[in-house]
Image (cartoon, rainbow, N blue to C red; front, side, top):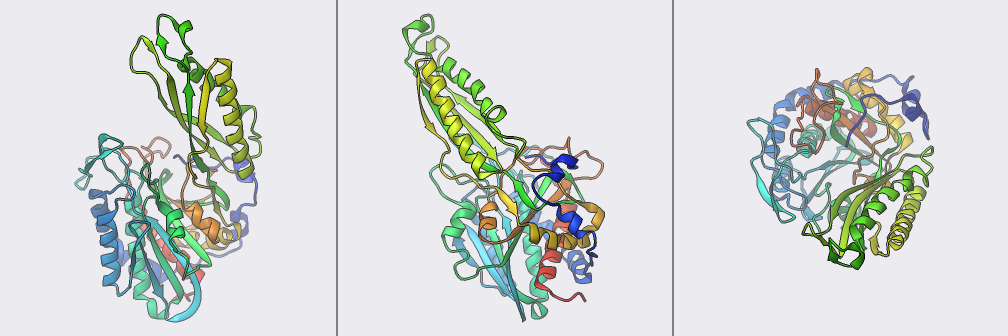
Length: 442
C-alpha cells in the first residue's frame, strides 16, 4: 500500500469538505504533559518496538506478543482481558473524574516476509506458511503500533487520578487476515463482545506508513482506505495433448481472455469519475507439463472499492464477464466473488476528524499534518468505524532525506521504520485522547 506524499487538488475536492478548512480557525494547543510523557517514555517505547520486531508472530499466532502486552498492563495495575479473537488483549483505564468513553487500537501481527535489513534486532524467525518455508517480519509496522499504545497506556495511568472518562486499550491480532480456514481480526473481536460492556463514543487508531515522511501525519475525513475483497475464478476445460488442442477445451486460453476482458469491468463499466476502483489478478495456477493442456486454471485476485453500490456492481460484472468469456471458448467457470467477507471501506467520521485535527496539529505542528489522497490499501479498523465514530491516521515512517515515493513500501522485506515515528505516534495519540476526554491542559 502506497501513499502519495501530497494530495492532488482534484482528489482533495472529492466527495466531502476537507476538515482542514474547518481547522483553520482552531488554535492548536500543545499540552506540556504530552511533551513530558513522550520524553520520559521515549526509550521504553523504542525498546518495546525492537523486542517485538525481533520476535514477530503471524496472524492468529501472536502468543508471545499478547503475553508481553498483558504482563505490562498488569504491572500498571490494570486488569487486562485476554484471549479475545484468539490472542486479543484489552484493558480499561478508568479516570478519576467522570467523562466520555473512548477506545484506542493497535494491531500486533506480522507478515510471512523474510527481512533483508541489517539491524541488530532484525527478525531471524522462520516458519511454514502455505506449505512453504519463509521468514516472519514486522514489515507493516505493527510492532510500532503495539509499542506506541503501551506508551500511551503508561502515560494515561500516570495521570489517571485527574483523567476524565474511560479509555479502552485494544491490542488486536490478525489485522493482516486470518490463515485459511480460520477467523480473526477486528470483526471477530466485535463478534466476541469487544463492545458488549463498554461502548465507546469514539475510537482512534494509527498506522506507520513508508509513503509519509517521518515527522508528518496524514489524515482525511470521510472515506480513507478501500474495501478489499478476494475472489477466485476456476476455469474448466477438457484436458488434451498440447499438439492437438482441438481434441479438448483449452482453459489457459480462456483464462487469458478472461483476465484481459475483466479490465473493462473498471475501465468501461464503473463510473470512476465518482470513485476509483481496482480489479487485479494476483495468482494464476494451471497445468503441470509443457505439452499437456490441463483440465482447469484457477485465477485469484482482489477488488478495491470505496462505494458499496460500486462494490456490488463490480462483483456482479466480474461474475458476468467470467461466465460469458468462458462460454465463448466452450469452457465453464466456477466463481467465488467475493471469497467470504472482505474488509469494508475505512471511513473517518468527518465531524470527529474535523474536531480532532487541531489535536494532531498541536502534537507535531500544523505544518506537519496534511490530507492524503484516497488509499487503495485496506484496513480492518473499518469494522470498528462501522460501529462507532472513528478516526484513523497515518504516521510518517520514512527518514528525512529519503524520498517516500522511492522508499521500500509497507510489506517489503526492506521496509525500514524511522524510529522518530514512535515519538510522533505517541504524542499524537496522547494529545488526541486528552483533548477528546477534555482533560485540562496543565
